[in-house]
Image (cartoon, rainbow over all chains, first blue to last red):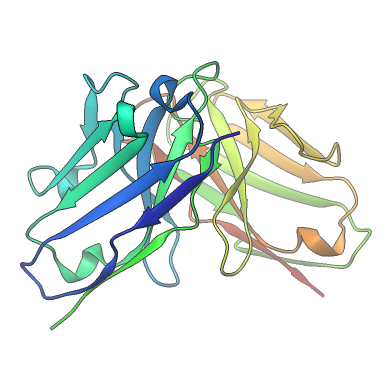
Length: 121
Length: 108
């Protein structure tokens, strides 16, 4: 089982930046597709971004394309989401999520506890 | 983008009742549909993937079915810990991966 711990959330003004981190336990991190999924206050779940196990394939939802950047360091078992030009609608809890390699991308198997992002002046 | 709709929005039931939740896709997703459970203040938990496969550790009372555009999650006999919000999610046509709006199962 993979344990995921997010950090880096906080309060930021519109137009500002935040860098979210996710620390993963276990030596199998490098075999997992990793993702960020967010949840606006009182709302449902929204997929934000995915990165393949080797980091070569990266995808974003349209609303964050060009503003957010996902990356990973398999040697350090870490996942990063660099968020720039933040908007109020980016506020919410951001979950780090991993996919079991045997099930393929898009089966969100393991979830962190989330880190809260608030974009407000 | 594949849009998922869930019904009903809220289901009011008692422990021991059978719960049937529906998820409909705007286009066929084959069997690439998952269900998640989320309790207040907690992260979602994977219950079912690829329409009918229970994730490890998920009790047998959670049963997923369907294919194409129509899917169901059945909880055969509700336990007190099952009162939560349930989301469906597709991975057939991506990006983006999309979620339904959720069904809240609350206690009558």
